[in-house]
Length: 176
Ligand SMILES: NC(=O)c1ccc[n+]([C@@H]2O[C@H](COP(=O)([O-])OP(=O)(O)OC[C@H]3O[C@@H](n4cnc5c(N)ncnc54)[C@H](OP(=O)(O)O)[C@@H]3O)[C@@H](O)[C@H]2O)c1
Image (cartoon, rainbow, N blue to C red; front, side, top):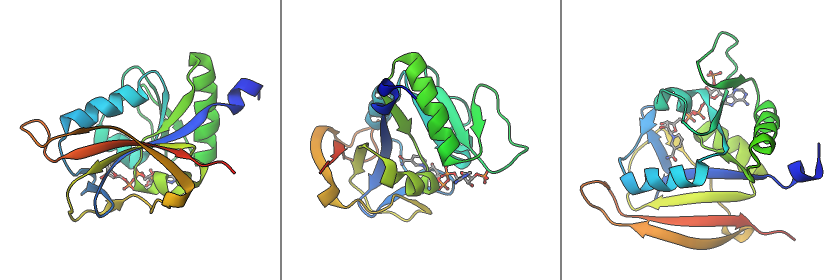
């Protein structure tokens, strides 16, 4: 591993409702066009790491990014994606991809199971707070605000294209 590899950040990218929900019935819980744009801006030209269920909810590889899908299923395969068997293998491969692209970040894009296992490893969170409370079966783990320095990176208003108001934040882990 080179010195440069050490500097590649692990960034979680997520949109969360006021009550922590990120998904309903295996799919997204809302349609917010401005959030999709923010997601694209923050993940483009980077490796994206995701769980098998999130990959299947997206349905195809995200263009312009190295798509890395984590599954325990030995029979799982999909065109245009790397398939790995563990979080550790995903991050190792993502670091190699990031080095090759000269990207400074790995994007971890969900879902709930993967966020749960990577929040402790994350250096940054691109966090969309969606101004709604709803029921869902996928959630984001609790963020301890003492561990993060938060800055605002914009907002969007409810409209025809945005189902709810939302605010965009970048959280950087506080270092001792
Ligand atoms: N709001 C947002 O920002 C956002 C972002 C992403 C996803 N989502 C939503 O989140 C939901 C999906 O999340 P989810 O928690 O149900 O599923 P997920 O995290 O996307 O995927 C879970 C799957 O990943 C694999 N996996 C998890 N941990 C593993 C490990 N340590 N080693 C190997 N494989 C592992 C397993 O696949 P196998 O079963 O194949 O072994 C597991 O079933 C959907 O509703 C989606 O729309 C929301």
